[in-house]
Length: 222
Image (cartoon, rainbow, N blue to C red):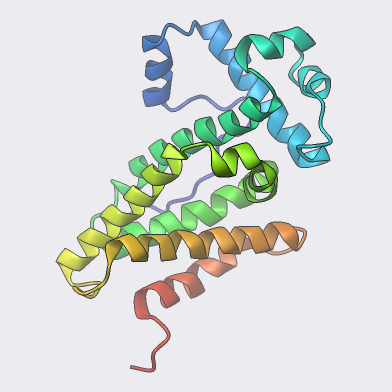
């Protein structure tokens, strides 16, 4: 039985092997990959602390321990850096979620695992929670122009669990998986947003069982 304990990859964490191999395939040398990751991690801290619009590239460079000009060797501008945080961190999260969920057999256990990892992960990395839930959504480029492929992959992961649940008889046959997977994600997303805006004063993990009860049993009396 997998306890699904999970912390999001923070500064200094090793990349998931699948992503590390992907970078090698694209010719990113180890030192360059490490510096790229260090800049991303530094940007998360600075954006969370000062807000995206108030942050300067020079502050991110100082946090990362690199020269200002080094930032532009890896990222076009501050917007590109913000969007890269989402893309890279989400890729890492999805890979690790898939690994953990694969250890569970039935759909209900897999859904519980995903819910627990989502909430526990953001609680373990509050700076990333602030960037994802607040700063990204203030970026017109991210909201309007970026294709958000990683979000689609995450929704697909939820959809796979729901489709399995339909086959097992855990979920109703008449549910729309496309609608239901957005309902699941939207619930988790709103919980984390509320937690961030409330000052992160309570334990997100305490919401796992109530959320699962709602997702698995609904709000009807019967």
